[in-house]
Length: 515
Image (tube, rainbow, N blue to C red):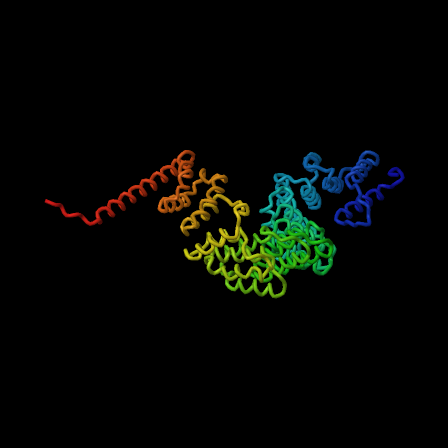
């Protein structure tokens, strides 16, 4: 086919190929410019015996920008021009910079810029943005962004494709704040309905929601999801919900849950994310309503589902103001699950003492239709009793209504507090009952010692012989510090008892001696 073409037609074809380098279309198949240009140039030089001109080098330099080009190819062309005595042109230098944009080489790029300055070639915005993208490809991210920002501040008109590349690269690198700044500018150029802008915004939504970046996630949601420009994947919606939960954005969380519910049956972790968003924003009432809706949807509620509420209430005790009324208000609409009431009771007890939590605790049957006495909850109320009288009442209730085989297994730290409270309240049967369970859990090997002091002192004072097997166990298998403490308590009690005996003896009336 080339043999049938004239030299003028081949040159025209080369010009046409060079013009297509900046034009892309989905309707036009991709042209292998590298192969076409090399074939045409070879035909001109070898068959048509055309002289080597700057135009030939410019064409070959354009071919180097193709993925089949290379840095070595650019360098050889520059060396060959020097050997042929041909001076570089501005277009050739621009072509070399475009090639180095795809095949980055910092030193060679700087050499070309030096050539352009030496020959007074114009280094305008298109040249600068080509250099900047080359820096980006060369992984000089901060420098590239700084140069791009400088151009923007100077009012230069940046081509949209430059923004596109930066947005994609920065998103992949998780430079999300910088990516969003460029996306805002790109949106102003192309408009909200531009297909490329929509695609980039959806990409930003994906990247930001993966990283739980709230500002970017919200921007993407409002820009392309809320107005139905895209239908996000299930995975992206899950990430959006997680982002909303972490950033206490209750509205975004609710909208994401609604979208999930339109596609499938929402699961417990979906509702928990909405609960986290509500409680994070300080709306305890909405968090409780969400858990009630979760139960109404047929999902079983457990203590684990209320963990987020518990953590937030403990870190932000001001939310407990009015918490009791919030629970009672929710119960007026529907019975509230016991786990929901329990987390409020537990939080109030820990922050303000069990005395303030007792009204809710006593009203459990009315609020949620459950029995008033729950073993775990009752134990916690015993632990957090601020007044001895409260502890005495609660321990007696527990002993009378909870069988030993109904006792929940607790942690060593909880047993430490529980045994101490029972012993101090004088409920020794319960104290020894929990001690037996605690020893199975390995409490003698822990550094918890408060329970030992309380139990041993109270038992010896009451002359309760059940303490001696426990003392023997502590002396034989406990830590050295524990053994020392037990011996010290025993010694103190022995001395105290002797002192009491001596005091009692000294107070007895003396009989007068008879002569």
